Length: 339
Ligand SMILES: Cc1cc2nc3c(=O)[nH]c(=O)nc-3n(C[C@H](O)[C@H](O)[C@H](O)COP(=O)(O)OP(=O)(O)OC[C@H]3O[C@@H](n4cnc5c(N)ncnc54)[C@H](O)[C@@H]3O)c2cc1C
Image 1 (spheres, rainbow, N blue to C red):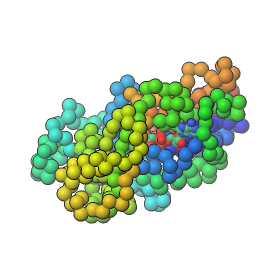
Image 2: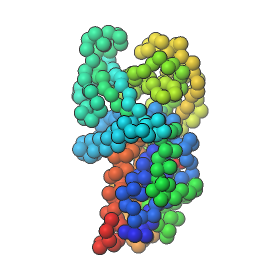
Image 3: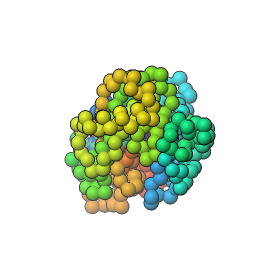
Image 4: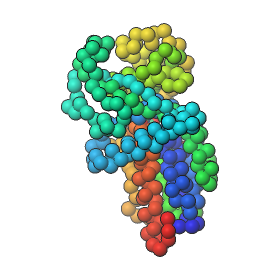
């Protein structure tokens, strides 16, 4: 639909992916990205950025598979292109280890990542407290590079960017046909979502360039993720904890746990520390709102938030999904328009 105006609220990895996807897929639309914080000030900027996901309880597995597969394939193409270093997208191999074998030894994404296999007994000897492990190659998407790269891609596709705190979606209703809410934890206030909770994560950035492979312990309590400039060492998962300050007790516990998994970490130099709040929900919310704003004649709303600890892993897939929902809103408004 020529002249259709779409607003995307939020410039983290979810909002930027959604804005790019809409601008590139629905070229007749004018897309504006609105956010109070941009890179490097978003939660997404500090994420380890490893593509890995756990299963959500109430969303059909096939839809979850699509989200992860679309994200993986999109980023794999970037990792294998000349854009990889600018976009901060790289392949990363490593292991996930378990004290006891999980009920499901093959996660639903085993055939989406590359080279998935179980660890041999010989490989497991390195992790004495663990009896089961998986090895695979996934992607590390470093958002401190990826977000500026996406933003450039967005403006190149004709997108506009505005720095603004949105107090209510209604205030945008008269200026846009569709509003896409990608405000992460901000949705707690912006749309009054009581099901959204912060899950606090603290990580260390460590200079240890000899480490090339990731190690993740079941449940993601401890992890070591080598990247292009430093190794991300974590972590914590503190539900309902809003503290953004670094906790020295957490630092000590993280180093103690991770050094047990990788003894050479004690030789690494801590370059910095970071705390972020995962926008967690029982399930991510990717759907059209039941009603248009302003008593039924105002803008349509599409939600895309609540990705918890897996926003980088699902951003492109949920952006594709949200773009389909935007298209359906516009088609409903103008049934004969070509999109
Ligand atoms: C320690 C840690 C490690 C992590 N590691 C990984 C990992 O390895 N892999 C993975 O997939 N995920 C990981 N995550 C999770 C990932 O960071 C999040 O899922 C992701 O950042 C969520 O992205 P988002 O775009 O929804 O939110 P955000 O990045 O928080 O962006 C929200 C945007 O909305 C804007 N906004 C909010 N409210 C308003 C408003 N009222 N008006 C205007 N703008 C507004 C904000 O300014 C911001 O631009 C990790 C998280 C943490 C904390």
